[in-house]
Image 1 (cartoon, helix red, strand yellow):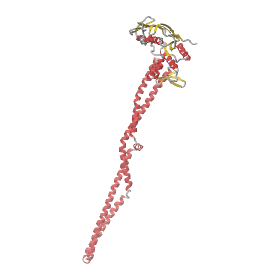
Image 2 (tube, helix red, strand yellow):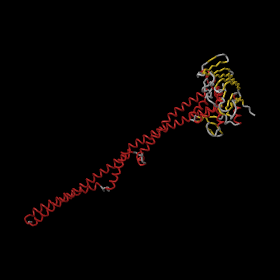
Image 3 (tube, helix red, strand yellow):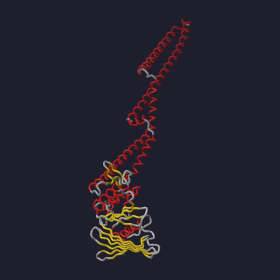
Length: 453
């Protein structure tokens, strides 16, 4: 691959002719403000069909031109021209080897598909989450189209599952707080987990038993009162008869027959009294021994308290139980989505593993990571030197567009001899033109092929 470049009246560069060939590293050097960046921007502008140079025309000229004749890696030859006017108008023209001419920037971009960033800029994106996402998207463009399509489909499914999972997390926290706020005691939980119907039935029996015994006691008391009343009545009548008997004794001579009559009446009364007393004794005996009042009263009071507790806790427990069931369902749904999200991520990792772009580069959590022994380090990790990061970026960018392997690295101050050697090897492996910028304290603009000792 070869590139001939002609630059006239572009910013600080009045007239510059370059011929660059593939498999070479070119060092663009010079002190500040001699046109190093202008040269690199001129190359980038041609293949992007987009001017990146503010005020491109030299201050004392009316027009600036950049002409490039490029022989691409697939053997095609193109001439591209950028014409910049003093009034700010920019025009791009491309002519193919077959003589087809176009001024369409869209067509030029489609032909070259050139990236609009340097390796240094690619590395700098790693400092933000959006930048790392952008790095990953560019890296994945190196995959075959079918693999890219499958990766994007898996990413979309992962996003759908992830988005479904996100509200579940806040719902779980909400329902856990609700359960905590319900503040069910261990005693309340134990009560609700037992057979409430059986307990309620036992309470009813206890209450009935208490009321039955209370009624029996009332009946017993009524019978005792009745016995007292009979006793009193008997004593009054007896006393009356005794008084009458005394009177009769005094009049015995005259009242013997009356005495006998009254004696018979008294005997009859005594018999009726004995019979009534026996009936009451039989009724009391039939009732059996009474339960101790304090025991049945305590049992009754406990039943009443339990009934109150069930009434007060049952509604709260229903809310507690329903919330717990809902929480379990949501946690299960989240767990299923966790598995689904992880499954899609594993499928994506396997896809990259089965379609390796670079042997020591992987995708982990949608970010580029570098395989370093047993470690997986993010590309922006400070354990990876800046020069190595830029070399990795350079390898990715050359994979990205094999048709036009022209790579603008950026500033090269961090490259030592070993890293420069790796850069040369990269240029040779890809038949690439690699350009790196270096600032020196003194000296005019120089563009030199790197020759290793």
